[in-house]
Length: 83
Image 1: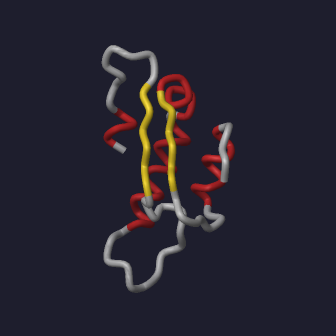
Image 2: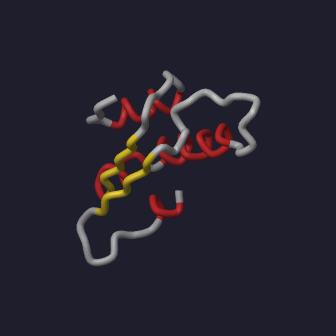
Image 3: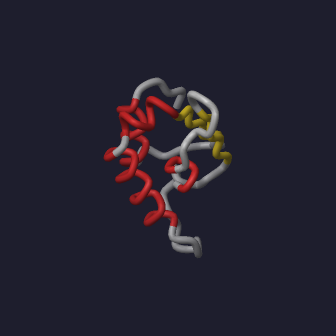
């Protein structure tokens, strides 16, 4: 989320590529990281700052597979996607 908040120095837009984040998968009991909390914070930030993000950021997620979660719907509402 720090990259989303950081300004684009010297460029009109910046591209952020996130690979195999696990944000689009349902949590299993075995996971030790708090993916749900991270996902919820990211989803909230995206909803609050959607227009600013669309203006200055190209956000690319590369995932092996995804589950239909609230964050997936948030990204679909933001515009173009290839899910």
